[in-house]
Length: 113
Image (cartoon, rainbow, N blue to C red; front, side, top):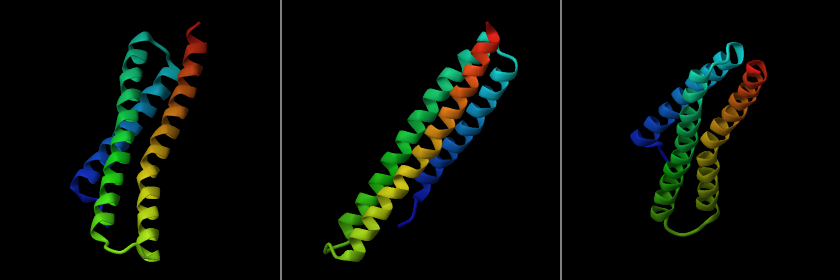
């Protein structure tokens, strides 16, 4: 079960957005400004949508494998469950990064006042 070009592209987008979002959040925590906050909000939304897109791509890949697998024996069920587990991983990474980014934003909000 390969990830395919679309999956690699979405993974790259999620990784780039994760790094940029965390960078902006660190910058906002160190030196808060309204302009950084206006950048952080859409970046966070883009990262969340990227994670949802990765889940959809992983699920589609898993279901495509399942449709071609034939009979539901133990090995095919194991591959199906493994595929769905892999589909959840980018979301876990992205939403963990969002939690850290908004914790840093809370520090920036505290320093703004």
